[in-house]
Length: 413
Ligand code: C6P
Image 1 (tube, rainbow, N blue to C red):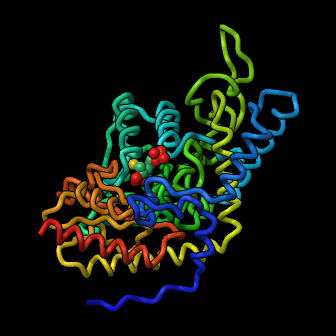
Image 2: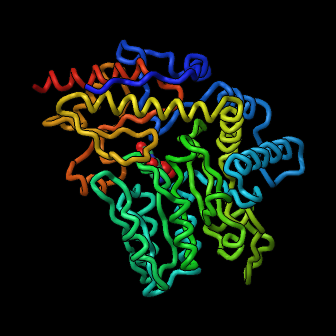
Image 3: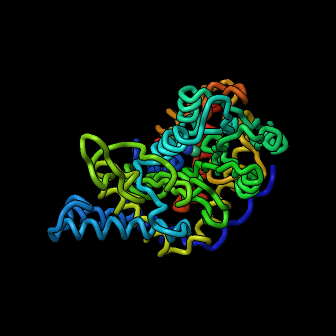
């Protein structure tokens, strides 16, 4: 047995007071919420901000001269500015509000794809992508007569970077890759990968859904051309999300959807479009949710975020050690650089049974293919059980997870 390390001094109990959902019991046991990669929980600050908006500010944005509409517009744009600062975009108009990471990637695939991808061109993705970063590219590739090329992974769940370099060529029109894998937890060296693509003049679209809630992200430092993420995985409500795009690209790209708000002049003969970001925000947006995202960022800025991220990483290491020490448990995804996610299988037990038995103990994990079927195929498993951590989780919760996993093994022995 390997010795288990001590945790840092991060005051997790104080942080937990900010998240009311964590105080409940489930199946008669205190809730242990370890499904943060699917959706993380929201703090009181976000709940209160949402209530205030609905009680006092609710109105449509960018449309009215009246007081409430102006108020809602100001708050909505303040949220965008919060996002800009949080990811260090140059301008807030480079941060397009979308429903989530999926919509953000679809926006780039459709808009960039229809303009820049042609017959015989190539799109590079990786073997560890979530379906959201596979299917939109397959759809546009089929429409435009382009080919999908895939960066392979190794047994640890790391990208084979030599192969990546070999895939890049004059036919490559875009690279789309995850910052952090949702099924393996691997943190990819995207800064280096972006620099490599840029040597070929190829833009890169990063799926940041699992990165923004766990790592500092600076889109200018990364030199990312596009960067997509979802609010509901970063302590904000569902329906909020962002696709960041460099202005140089977004200016050249056609609108993704047509409708209200994204136009300058409409006649039956011709329509001209609004500038950024409105060009990409057709129709009434998810105003309350995006304001909630702004509040979630306020919350993250109010805590010692670097300490929180470091603590969460220690928790992942602690959990990895604990589960690795249980006979019959196999960790899927053993990359050197990992964040938040611990996928595992238990010999002769289906992951859905693991999920059900853990739920009986009040422990929420995800069991399934995690919308990453090619990853499951690579590791030759039908599914995995996945514990995913946030900075409000505790060492005691990891202990409960390990005990419950032991119980699963006993039940099925
Ligand atoms: N992963 C999970 O349990 P949306 O659904 O648009 O908010 O996010 C899609 C998405 C894109 N990329 C990655 C890396 C993701 O992890 C996700 C969502 C959830 O792993 C739900 S399948």
